[in-house]
Image (cartoon, rainbow, N blue to C red; front, side, top):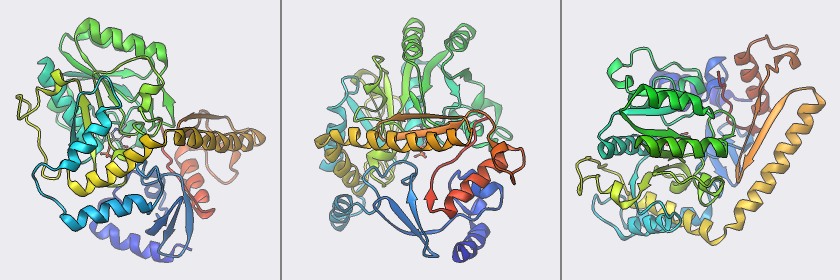
Length: 399
Ligand code: PLP
């Protein structure tokens, strides 16, 4: 059933670490074969063996209008014909910036980069430059990109994907990170009491990398107060939730206003785009106006901007889409819950706009006769069974 993919996987393993550039743990850990994808259309992807899958991952989040969306494709093709990259200012970059800035009272200016990771790293460098401090508070379970281990923490990502990145990370890079527990204000207070050098607190306000875990309102309010009291910046990492949970991302669900926001995924419509934004006073610390050097060969790349503009304009013109997506997601997770209940599997579900997640908060392995009592094997088996049934979805283990 996955013969060609099996061959492609073997070849990939020779030249690509792990054979895949993606944290699809279940594939790698148990010798599962990732389907190699040939094409996508709407909600479906098709592998090189001719199998089709309903795709709940949508390229790890960006494709809110689905695969091979005609309007995005037209925008990309039109722009590509005019030139792929200029390394010089373009109107299209300003247009996309305007569309985003208009939505947020707390964002006057935005800078484009090429990925969510880069957005987070740049935001943290800016927070350090702005405050003149070094330390960062981040949360166990929140994911901020593959360079967590350099700038944010050796722990994140490791916790989510069980792929320890800490060994070998020089202590210098990690010593400034204070790790707090998600949704536990006391642990954040302790960080502030332990250090007078905290530049920022970074959080996924709707954590999307450990199931779907929205932060509680009281907790966010408490974070805001602590940041104000101690003069630290509050960063919402909305790479996952931005334009997915709502047009305003997590900010539609909370009264709390962050100092800085990072974006990625949906704003690029499938092209490599990340961004970070804040009030003008903070952004003024960026080069060329300020001392924090920030630049990228492909930042604001016109083809990527064209994709983003096409998506963001349509979302802004049709905000009711989020209600439709949320209603669908609720129907879907409701169905999952019924099945889980019928089999006595404890399942927790949550929905925010088009984001939905469910997680097993007890070891569910007992329900699979032939799986051993290990979460990893359960996840692997679960994943593979779903793939066999034509369902492509993201599955990770939070320890
Ligand atoms: N921040 C969050 C909240 C994310 O979910 C991700 C990716 O999943 C990132 C940062 C990193 O983004 P990228 O994979 O585009 O580098």
